Length: 264
Image (cartoon, rainbow, N blue to C red):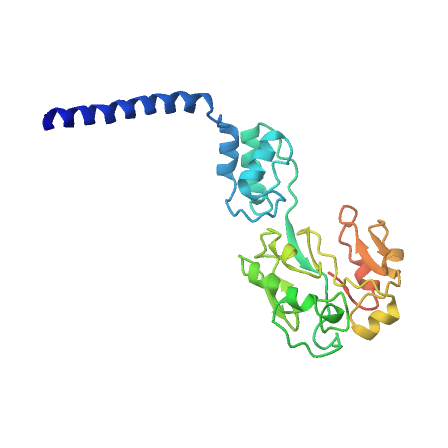
């Protein structure tokens, strides 16, 4: 009897397993998510950094957007031209012109040039310092705080704090955009690698106010805009700005800048 009971128990378990497997097979086929092979191929071509520099939630998000036609084949700033060309082949389209970009810190307020309003004793973190009175101890309310929050998030060792401000090594920068998000002052932007003209200031104060806070600040004089033959330079909110679509990197604006905050 015991032997028969064991056989019945085994048969019952086996029968239940068989029935469950049949149901799972049926439901699996009915509710299976169809895999987009083109999307898989695009995802495989991406570098896999999942940095978010493309504006999408990771490489899988960008791959899905490219296949849907919502993002350019060259949408990955880290992959560069080689990845853009490979994805273009997968999608069967022209890769177009890929513009390599690098991060740039819009501040030239070094330790000697920028004064302090008080002595900051809080955590050595830019986000913590930015919520202190005056958005940090620097007399300039727009300047780099120098605590290296951008440096901490850079995976390429492309950012270092030198003389009180963050500096980017363009040869190491992968344009992932992590530093852009990490800076609470909004000082970092991605600019074309090939264009070598930069405005190293973010102050929107009027000239006299800026000069009291930092002698390296833009005074909004407008000489750069008047000099530019290509209408690539303008002054908005007392600050010089460059239109990189128009700029030919001639450097005439930098030559005319009295404060030398337009660099070449």
